[in-house]
Length: 146
Image (cartoon, rainbow, N blue to C red; front, side, top):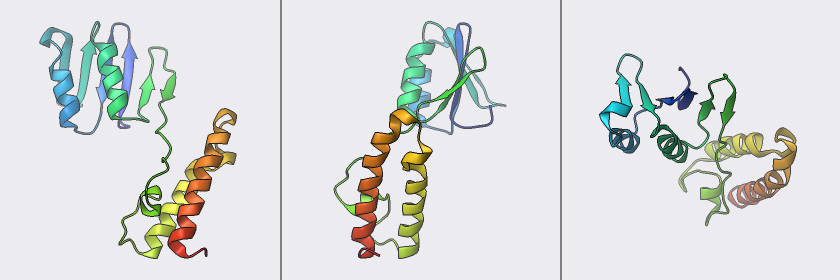
């Protein structure tokens, strides 16, 4: 597993690869030793049934958008939640209040690219429109409508 974070499901076990996250490691270490293993060479945790599903649920909560590969090689991804209507335009665009205009524009472009309805699958387009509207309002507020 090279891409982080990733969970690979096998028959009766799941392997987890993720950047260091102390809380996630603590959750895995709560599993009895007979049902977990860590390989320091690859930095991959293996958790066996009956604990694999519970740890997978915790993993997906800690790493929304993580890749999950099943035993047949099919890949799925829990997509990260879209930005919510946050209190300030800075928070909506994920920038600091002291951010220069170049950073604001870069964040705006990245968010538009990610949530543009034409780039989303059909069932998510309505949600994409709503998210894009919030992003556009926030950008207009921060740049004076330019």
